[in-house]
Image (cartoon, rainbow, N blue to C red; front, side, top):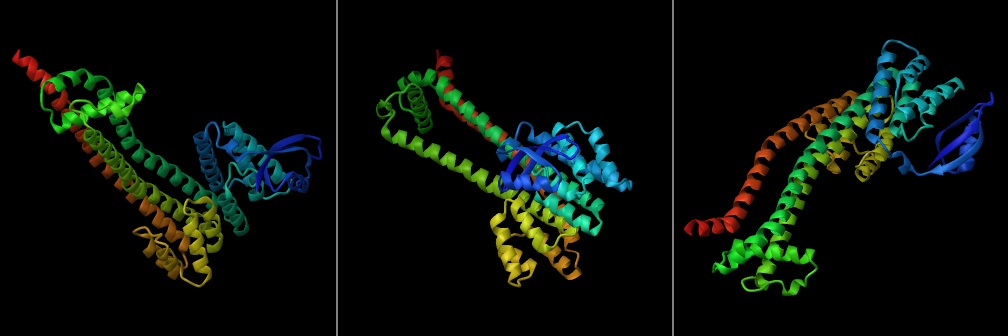
Length: 398
């Protein structure tokens, strides 16, 4: 379904505007008519328009909205009064505008989940499912808390994994910048002296070849005639193999160590917590699978798990067949199947795995920081010993 921005008139003649999902403009007009609104103007807008300006601030505002809503509902304040209070206190313009429209829709007879559904750029499907199920069961207060717990976990995990990936990337970029400066500006200074000094070792030939190739690329020279004297085609090939090997090592490190270890585990924890959130709000296992399939990065595996469950395979076995398991997930799911408390068990599993991931990332940083500094130091020592140390020895003999 597409996203549409609309302007409409209510029975009192007040012009109202907002955003709603629909198949086409006629479908949106029909939806507005059900809310006693006469459409004036309806136009389609790109979903990318809502990944805008300050998505971090928007996510934080939605998180704060459910936190404050939970606190107000815990004080037994009626929903409509809680929304009015939040409307007065919120400072985020988009959230404030959405709250005004939600309050209006509830006054017009719509339920809470129906009012939220008119703002798909703020409230994804799993939030709507949780609120809809909670309204039926009369557990909106608990649903609001579980939604807040999920959003908080999602926010914390994203920060933690970004931190884990950001630091090595910065080190690699800094190291690449250092290599560029040395090869572009420092090695050419020592090149003539090294060539005139006699026989060169492999490291010196490699550095000079790398410097010639880099300077040649920057100055648009013919690389086929770059190697001269001590710089042979063999050395040039060796250098290319060296660079390719280094690049492969970096890619394998980022893919295997960083991506597989942290990002995939984060996706699994988020999916487990999302699944638990929907179940705790009154949704069924099939509804949880369908909604989490839309909102998770594990769409293909979740779809196959759903098909396996429909064919009669137990949930724990279906997860195992798709290799969707965390160290604690299998045992928690089996306990949930036998006790009938699947939502609680999955929430416990997500919390436990989140704490384990935190500890693993912290331990990773403790080991990675000195290792990267050691490698950078060894690289600098290697450069100095093969370029400027011969110069120093020569001048010291004079």
